[in-house]
Image 1 (cartoon, one colour):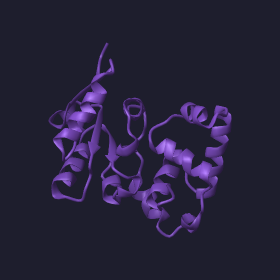
Image 2 (cartoon, helix red, strand yellow):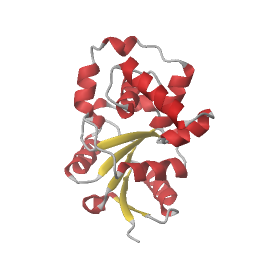
Image 3 (spheres, one colour):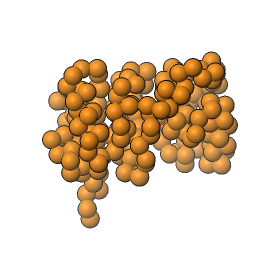
Image 4 (cartoon, helix red, strand yellow):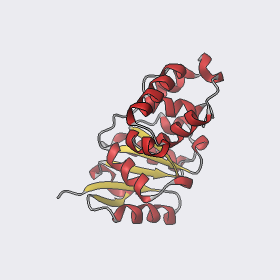
Length: 194
């Protein structure tokens, strides 16, 4: 069985090693250091800050073919420049991150298309939906998706059917004026709705 190479980077070597340890327990994922980004299918980048070194890491990831997952302490810490770096397919919150969420997100990243965050953020800067108030279940649903849960996993959390979750997503997408649930999560993060 081919193992999926996953490059891991963090400003803090202990954080990077902790992420690699979580991923090592999975048979089909092989965590590697960031110097192997060119060989990796997925890159997990933690502690993204607006430093010259972090920007260089993001640029190197954008130049590779790897899909990028960002890991941050709080979802509101995500900087638009980090999202606009390209190849970013998801953002995870380190405070709620566990092995199952991380491995699920890495697997999903291999098939996810990078989001055009730059256009999404620019198009939403003056959009009227920035004043949208989300209900508690809507916030919880978007938070679950931001953490990498699938529709089926969200349905189990809500104790409802997948169809009900899909209907909630459709209504959310319509209310926020975005294209899909990934954009809804990004929009909610950008506007501090979750």
